[in-house]
Length: 152
Image (cartoon, rainbow, N blue to C red; front, side, top):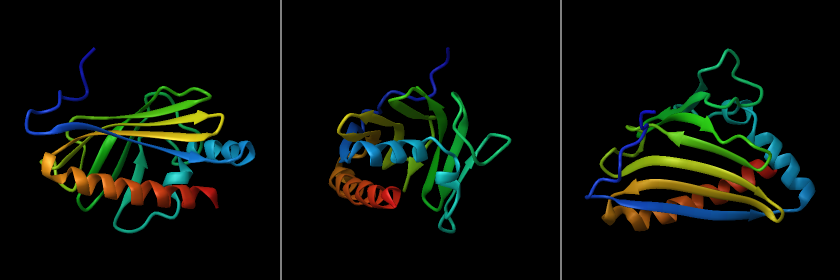
């Protein structure tokens, strides 16, 4: 099988951002169900950003190996859904996926884990060393707002 991602370049660092969203079992069930649906990501998109799936429908549950892309200015996050289980959903990004610039942030992998106490998010990217503090702050802000958006 061919690799879909390059090794981390010597000029970058392999960084994994992790966070947990604590919630009750009832809220977690609803949150998890919504994370498995395409329409959660295609409805209410803010122009000029967009999420598209290489599927006959842009709604309904994800399928293993399904191709997708989040794109817009300074963003090309293309990859494939993988690892679909009752407690995990992954997104493996293809070589060339980036945020802001391919020289700053190369996206590698995004994983969601359903755990008894809530949702764990793990986001791996290759980051230019001087940009790492900004990446950390940006992730805390983004995933904090993601939590709020998904709970309502």
